[in-house]
Each structure stands twice: as C-alpha cells, then as structure tokens.
Length: 138
Image (cartoon, rainbow, N blue to C red; front, side, top):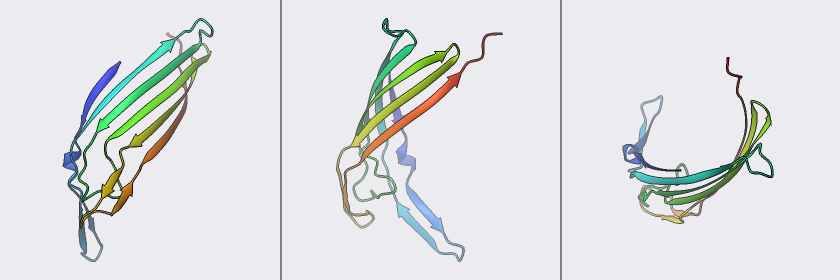
C-alpha cells in the first residue's frame, strides 16, 4: 500500500505576535510545499501465531525549506522515516497494537537575517501503543 501527498506549507508565510500594548512583531517563515511518499504493508495471521499482525513502513518527505527562515520552532526539511509495528487479538473483539517510527531529517544549515542560525540535525523517535475493542455485530 502507498500514498503520495502534497503538504501546503507555502500558506505559512509568517508568525505575527500582537502584544496587549499594541506592539506587533512579525517573524517571516516563507515555507515551501512538501511532497510526501508513504509505503507500507502488513502480514496477517502468520501460521506460527494466527492472532498476530506484523506491520512495516517507509516514508520520504521532500520539503526544501528556505535556510534563511528556519528556526527551532519548526525545523522541517527533507526527511526519511521507517516504522515497524504489531497487533495482537487478545480476545475476540479486543486488539492491542504497538508501533515505533524513527525519522531522520537531512542536516540543515540555517543562516540569514531572519534565521535562528546554526546546524539542525534532527532525529525523532515515536512510540505508539493502543487498544481497540469492536462490539459484536447486532
């Protein structure tokens, strides 16, 4: 299974802060759109444990953001991610799921008058745990 999405970052042009005494500060962002490609699959009912479902996935985001407006508030850029997960039917109707994703972004070097200068080397670990109960058909 796969998907291809357009994330419309270009509508995010600036952050504007308005103080209670009339002070207005505008921080330019000037972000660009991103293309995101996702691929994944699952293996259900393996013969060694029929109540188990195994999952894996891959993501690529192409998001060339301007180096002169990058800041720690959003260091979005080109990224890769891999994920694995499993689900288990504990009893009929009750499923427990766990998933893990590791995302790593291309290293960014921010510079310019509106940037928070520095080198951004971002890595993200995401863990998901959930349970689902399905009521029997009436």
